[in-house]
Length: 251
Picture 1 (tube, one colour):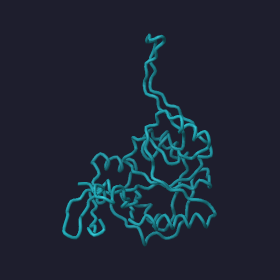
Picture 2 (tube, rainbow, N blue to C red):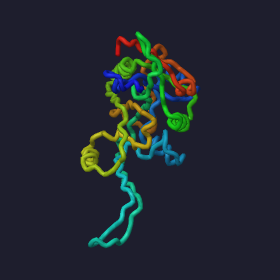
Picture 3 (cartoon, rainbow, N blue to C red):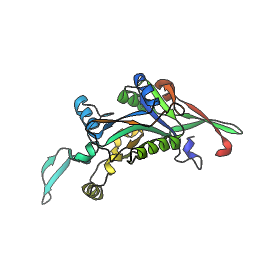
Picture 4 (cartoon, rainbow, N blue to C red):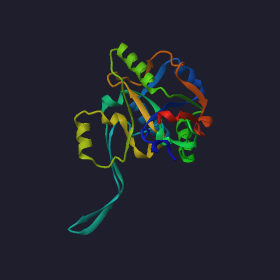
């Protein structure tokens, strides 16, 4: 039974995590968030020819048209291969972002139910685990259950810089034609900051951006010490099934 099947916990965020390498752990705990701009992730996929951490769709309006047959007067005349329309925005390409992973009640399975508590365990598929490790080349995970406090600290740090911090989970879509989505992009709406192709849904990304601070490459966002609220674990130990005991009185 999944934890999200319990009333009141249908879509509850439990952890916000950063998959990373050992050499970057202390920098994060010190509150130095390294934020590449959107352009860097576009160029990363082009350079590595691998979509994962790098993503050539980042920050752009994307329309993917599948292969189609073409008819004139009901007579077949030709076919067209799958094509992609990409419209980018120079300003969006310079916006810095910081990506994390959110794990929700949908990702946990109830393994023990006692009189006063239940024990839940992270339950990702083997394929999802392998893709995460391959995408991020990581050996550590930094995590907390106190998202509200983490966001508060980042928001306050942004205010000190007299700028805004935006944060949202990524919406994973298929990039099929959508007139309203295209018009919003043309009108300067920044939906594309928080949309990615559905093939990357296993990443469960939660994103923080500084939309009013465009940079040529990256920005080091200093938010203050985070070591009091984050825990560090080996990636294999964490993904193989971290467990939480939940007081049943809160369910």
